[in-house]
Image 1 (cartoon, rainbow, N blue to C red):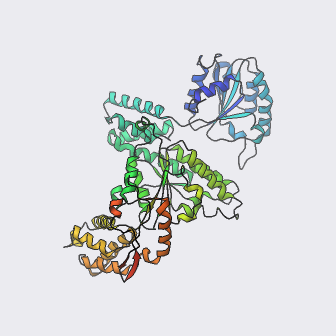
Image 2: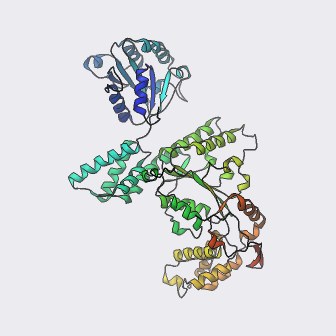
Image 3: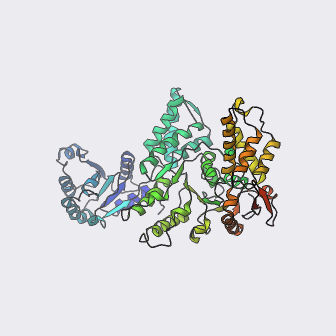
Length: 549
């Protein structure tokens, strides 16, 4: 049985006389529509059945004789089901309120009655089934063996596309909304809406139409804003609104090319090539070299929602809640897939694996996370960053968890030129500030020479400190300001030389260099020392295998 063939699965459960089914969903109308279509489909069910719904506010609703019965009471409703003599499917909405929760005990009289009628439903001359339809899944221990849980998935691509097509057709007829979408753009818009309920998707499309009187590929951002609401309600994941573009990241062209080649790989067009959705990447390297920056920029490149998972929020003082938090985070990420799940400094989150102080909670959460990464079917791209890669367990680094492990080393001369270009153009916009200072290739090369061994964050600080020099003197900035501040900074390549060497040694055989070979060619194979700043010696050796994408 295919997992996606939900309609046939439910029909077979009805035919097999399963007494109680439980559908957990917020989409009551969509679930009821599915049940009605099954009940009237002679190809799926030979014996047609009435669908009778119950609400605590109305009791049973349906034909006149059903409505006359006093069934607002849950107990009387169950008695009515027991005595009903015709083929039927009884849908009990929000019946979970009688099953108890954290602050309320179950109604044992109701539970006892359900157990009483279980055998009579199986042995009834005419088939009868009971469906519990609720937005939350709640089962008392007494009924676990009697109730069958049926996952009710969110709308498929086909269902959302059909809804969008209907909305487009209606608005084309009215002529009030301008539609600027080709087939590929429509697919992107529908893919962006995956993870929303059908009602939420329709609301997002409607909002996109009325905001500017047209529907186009630019309205993907409106869809993502609707998804942001889902993330905010979890309290575990953070929706990252990033305006960063790959153009804002200097260097790392090897990693950028790898990411560009995998753009749109979750779309229908990729399936023609038999391609799976990429699992994710692990980016390690020297602190301050742009690992987090490029993580944020992927969202803009791929036009996908970026979710940040804080491992610290997963752990809780209540026994068992940490595992539930991880399951909830994963389920949310999958619900709005395709999406990007970003875990910053992942080694800190799983640092307690070797200790037993948390009674194995960290190990269980880590194991659950690894299993999900290995077997996940939904297009959730995981991007994890790590500074101290040696502290990660070997299970995480083996093939199948991540598609690739990239190493980000100290910026090369060419990369430093690009980083300076980005930061200077970003800040020197006012003529009164820039004055006679021009961003030329010669100037950029001179600055790159001055900052040999600096990471990207330190180069940004050189620019900022240089501007502070000019701001303090109330004048335009000059080259000497940047030259002065570059000599005042002691880079990480000096203060953490031993740690950087260890990271490079590890990466030489285990990771792929994020910088392409042509940019790395300026470095010799031997450990040649150079002098920077105030006579600080650093090594020019590079880490990471040479593989160009």
